[in-house]
Length: 110
Image 1: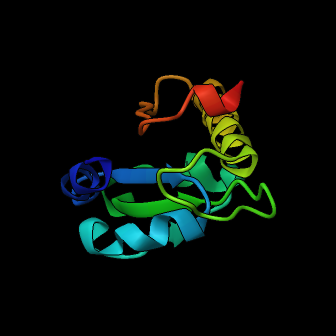
Image 2: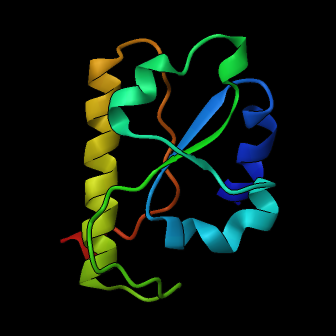
């Protein structure tokens, strides 16, 4: 489970989750806490030993309704926007971050 695997890393370094807050809320018990909201332009500041912790970027896809296990256009829009944002951040901060994705329904993104 992705949420369980995040917790140990966040104790040692910054971990940034990209996705709607409503989608992350059900996983709070596994994450250990609610991610600290951060804007994409502040990501570069997350360096050094004091930056460790759990951060979250809401891609603001608008109108997203969480329906676990069900494909929807809203979920696809959020998944695509989250991935695009992650790639942009990786390009902008080359060599400073790693990218790991949770499972994504590729079928719904067609």
